[in-house]
Length: 240
Ligand SMILES: C[S@@+](CC[C@H](N)C(=O)[O-])C[C@H]1O[C@@H](n2cnc3c(N)ncnc32)[C@H](O)[C@@H]1O
Image (cartoon, rainbow, N blue to C red; front, side):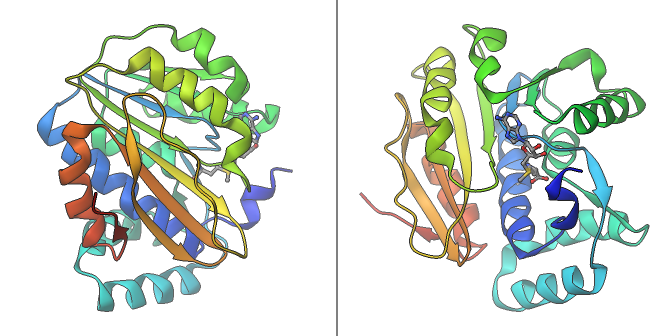
């Protein structure tokens, strides 16, 4: 069984997914569907929520402190009320609606379910699913796109897949690109974030709510809009 099943909808998910949909929304407004979405550790479009009361409690606490959580909570509430949880890939595809997306998922059962969900939602013709993060660079190849969003979300240490992340970013990056890479790390002490891939700056913003930690890297064109929305979610933005 995929261990993610027991974690769905926790505080780490709320922090990660609220930022993801806001980044996707700004990218949609500025670039539109000519964007590429990539997820290195995908899981599913939706799953069952483990503890809906805890999700509501954590979400409410964040909303009371930061003004940026409303869009995420409004969107996710519709799923939670049905005992489900819209996961990262589902949220990003719903909001950004990119022309092309690549999702990597290593677990066979999960991958089959993900493909079924993609078919049911009508996403199959523009979403490619690969069996592991390592396969992504070969499948993606060199891509021309104007908008780019990537989520890097292993269970623990994102440094292990950073060479792959850098390779993908290098194949996509160009001077006019509006793009962001959101990275999740699970650790009890401050995570030492890796250097940005070529063409990206950062981390341009981070949030630490141990053990849940997140960072965002962005291209020069996307740095300011990303920092603005992440500030509204309580992230710390770095000023150069
Ligand atoms: C933390 S979960 C992803 C959660 C999802 N991104 C979300 O926020 O809703 C990590 C997923 O990555 C998958 N995974 C682990 N190692 C992988 C690898 N090397 N390549 C692709 N997927 C992997 C696991 O099976 C699991 O489904």
